Length: 255
Image 1 (tube, rainbow, N blue to C red):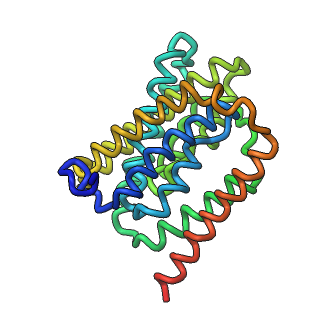
Image 2 (image 1 turned 90 degrees about the vertical axis):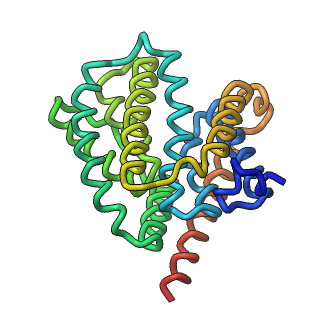
């Protein structure tokens, strides 16, 4: 049984949940590869049903780091390095402030924030391209990094900033993946410094990174016969249901 193995026992999760999360990592990566839909947001929503938010954000960060590093390396020739210099400055400041705030907040508050953010990402207007100079880039780096400590999936917001700096698709994808890798990296470090025990989750994180990689490689082929418009509708309904369940759990905890 997986839950009795030393490498998995520290998670406190059952066999069914462990296997389910590994499969979910594959599926969300496959969906992203096939339809371009945010697998990071989907995985975050699914994991939130089984993992406390205080644990969810750092663990999800490691898994997403693995996904983004691979993409950034593959497209490294197209990275817009001038953008990243100022983005990193803002990220460091945002992470430093966020790490001091997040440890003082109760899990129920984080759960409410995450659920509302997911509903906004699903149903709210898509962030428009944000054009601006180094100050704006640094500011958005700080804001998104601060939010990443509570919400995890700030990729759509960062994409709006990156797309405002270049119209070349490969440059946008490469720079976005690199920016996400940097932000996840600092976030992981920050959670480690405030005492998060990554070693308890390392086996599950490795398995989810590996299954996600396989999903990226096979997703487009495996799902080529699925109707995209139907999938997008189902995708939004399922994520909405997960966010509402999270809100109900938070409301129950408050009572």
